[in-house]
Length: 483
Ligand SMILES: [Zn+2]
Image 1 (tube, rainbow, N blue to C red):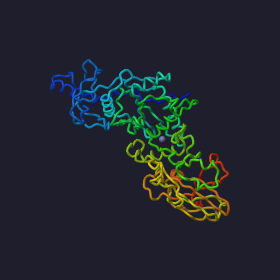
Image 2: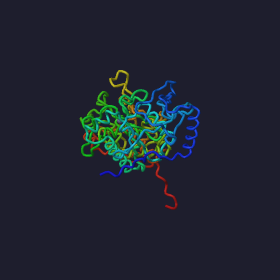
Image 3: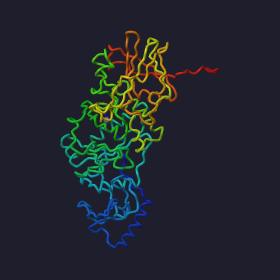
Image 4: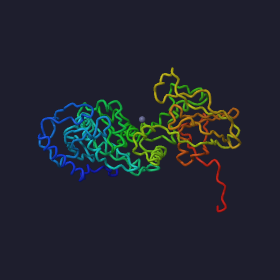
């Protein structure tokens, strides 16, 4: 059913220059120190402290040979940032055994890694990170020993096979998107950790999202199975596709650093009913973020999304165009809805709305007394419109840039617009949000755009309503002599 999943080959073993240095350092250390392979290693995690740590009981008993050494006498990784800093002495490092199981390179299958072994592995992998393509995304997966074993018992398949299936689906969705991310999603590896390792400072227990993949330089993010995972009873399991779409949704954040589309919803705590007075229950219960033309079925929508739709695909393309694809700091900073909008927008509701009055309301952050005020997306529609005007004889109005006060991101609290058009006794309305303006910008309308869209009546079903906006040049080019 799925195309073969592209997986990284096991670690490249080509370190000719490093090996030479390693051998020299090894001989120097052997002669100089005299004792090698004693009962205690200096804790080379001691970037933070000078504490000594005994050899783990599972450490190899036979002497380590020069051929096994890749990273002698250097702190190559730290728990905090995974990047390490040279300069402090430490013992030779031996990569934990790995094997490809059900299509996924696995560490710790037989002997889950301890905290120090994980730090060592990260430092080791970071000495020569695997290459990252510009239009591909890379993930590392981790699980506690208990989560790993329980999953296999309860679900009748290995967690590796399950992950490969989900990665394959997402990989295909990326490649089929418009525009495609040709490189898709690549699963780097799966690491099984001893129980109890998931603790501060990478306490991913609460969210299981790790935007920096424990500091692994070859991964855009990681996902960790800390507690027992029950996809079929606890998640959004799609039995037809055999996918936990809640898991895929979270990867949109963890690996791709994209925001929640449902952040544009207005919830029951906010009084939108007065603005929607006279409309049906369908409108009063319709959540503004769930636009079927942009979000329905998208991974970023959550609650069952299983594809990468145009908006999300353009968001990734925009980042690629700016060279940001694997820039973790920048992407996390920009994780939201960017203030990339045309300088001037002209809303066009068609000649049937000519001369009608138009009111545009913009959401604001919840007031302090609001019950959900602490939610990052808590917003209200205030009764004062940001624009009170009249459509021209073609049913158009110039609105400029309604988000001009934001430099990088438009807060989800202030990113939603409600438009009300009144002509005599008749009223029409619709939702817009920052995504409509992002789309115009990403379609090349960076300076100005004409946005042609329909208005709904209270009798329309918002789930069936045609929300699509067509983008046009505001000032069509004069035909040139050659045309
Ligand atoms: Zn989410």
